[in-house]
Image (cartoon, rainbow over all chains, first blue to last red; front, side):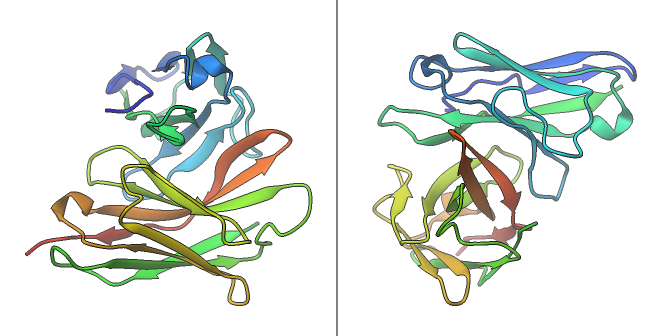
Amino acid sequence: QSLLTQPPSVSGAPGQRVTISCTGSSSNIGASYDVHWYQQFPGTAPKLLIYGDNNRPSGVPDRFSGSKSGTSASLAITGLQAEDEADYYCQSFDNSLSGYVIFGGGTQLTVL
Amino acid sequence: QVQLQQWGAGPLKPSETLSLTCAIHGGSLGDGGSSAYYWSWIRQPPGKGLEWIGEIDYSGRTRYKSSLISRVTMSIDMSQKQFSLRLNSVTAADTAFYYCARYECGTGRCYFDSWGQGTLVTVSS
């Protein structure tokens, strides 16, 4: 079981806005540790999409944004495009004995 | 821009040892400068999510996931700019894509900014 919980799947039509949630606890997100997001296409390695809750690496479109509040974080994608169809993972740090670097279970985004 | 290239032997039979190596091209090992780097291994069973295995820094200091600590060994060769993963006594549950990755820590934040291409390791009798 992942210490970070994500919905298994989300979907949206082109042009729409979708959000992907990442729910943690007081030993990770709630302890103010950063949340990062990765995008993964089938058969390829994950790629950093958002770091430090809401920062985009160079080259990532501003359609992607992150936010965090309490024990949860969210990834928002506006102006959805077909090329955004991928798996998305949140990642943080956990200070309990159960983990160190932790990932969410992943969310598959389908563009309708 | 750092690039990571990984390789390793497979497939494996149960009880054998998984061995993977990752070469670091175009970057420092983190033995100086404003950022610290932790050279990491992450795995992903086919069709499933990502699992952090552990990390090693330029000095050879390691941290491993608690559930794997008895079977994992990581090493680093500064002269060759390579780091390695060994996982012994493998079972079918260890079947996964294995990725090497750089965990960059700077200005108080740490994240995986570079990844290897991934290696599928299959364990089957």
